[in-house]
Amino acid sequence: MTPLGAFALFLIGVAASIFGTLVGLGGGFIIVPVMRIAFGVPPAIAAGTSLVMVLANTAAATYGYLRNRTIDLRLAIPFTIGAVPGSVVGVLVVQRSTPIGFDIAYGCVLIMNAILVIRRRSIASRAAHERTFAHDPRVGVVAGFGVGFFSSLFGIGGGVVMIPLLLIGARMAPHIVTATSAFVITTTSPVGVITHVLGGDVDWHFALPLVLGGIVGGSIGPAIAKRVSSPRLITLLATALILAAVGLAARHLL
Image (tube, rainbow, N blue to C red; front, side, top):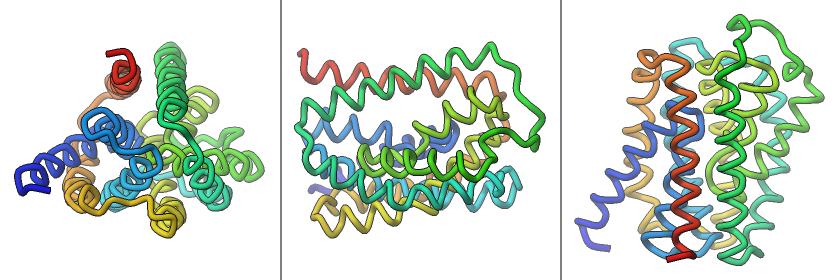
């Protein structure tokens, strides 16, 4: 890869990580469509490479969220426990996925989440630290399995499960959800990353500049999140999900 190409990937990693940090999705939902559309990277390698960047991005963001004390640790720990086996299963599934099947499934998940998040705008949030059904450890472990599964399957972290579940189902405040989602992704992504690396699914020519961009973007994101209103965060999330899905569909239609 040329130095110019590596620098372009670094900038993409910065932008994706800042935006991903704001909405709690880790930035992978932008990186995967870019790798699939612009570079034609196979699904398993796109997912594995993106997950490496997501780990760097969310780790940097989590540090900021811990300092801001916006992470709900009571909620996060059961999710983390359930996500570990889900991460391994997700890798096994994506390694057997066809390119068009991967893109269709990925696009459907993104659109579904966008619709749910838009609906969330009409639902009032609970108090910042009020307990919800999602705080039940049994619910957390089961949902955590889905977090780990989708994290490794699509290389986007587990925000696609946590965001609609916690924003809509539990009516938690968006800033708490994004921070808690980042923490869970950080603590569970290493399992998926290691499994992808052992399966040869990480292209380090792409991963290294994206990781550097992810660290920079993840460090900036929490400071920006403190200045962005909750309704605006929801609008940003829905818009980004729809654009990513449209991009994947266009790849097969054009």
